Length: 126
Image 1 (cartoon, rainbow, N blue to C red):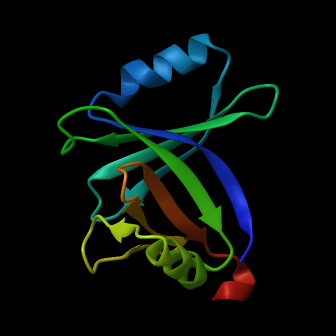
Image 2: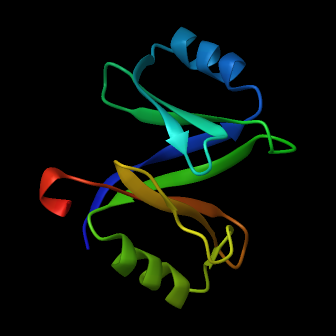
């Protein structure tokens, strides 16, 4: 398994104010994905001139802002099993969100930190 992306992710019900802050810090919107999970979340990927990334997710269901580590991998099942072997649990229970371009879920460590695990499909994956 190879980790292809690793960066902070902020989940908030007020993503616009966080996006504005990061724009003032020199970040630009690079990609917007609207079909996360059951369609109730939107992910805005931002990048600055030095190549640093942050993802900001609009999700009305969260009671407060949540920090996660976004980790994209080339083999979702292998990464999921590795994290599970270290005591991580899928916060969606048995559900894995899947869209036409990716699959993923949030994994919580035994101590409480979160990894947003995802695999973005490439043409050869289909």
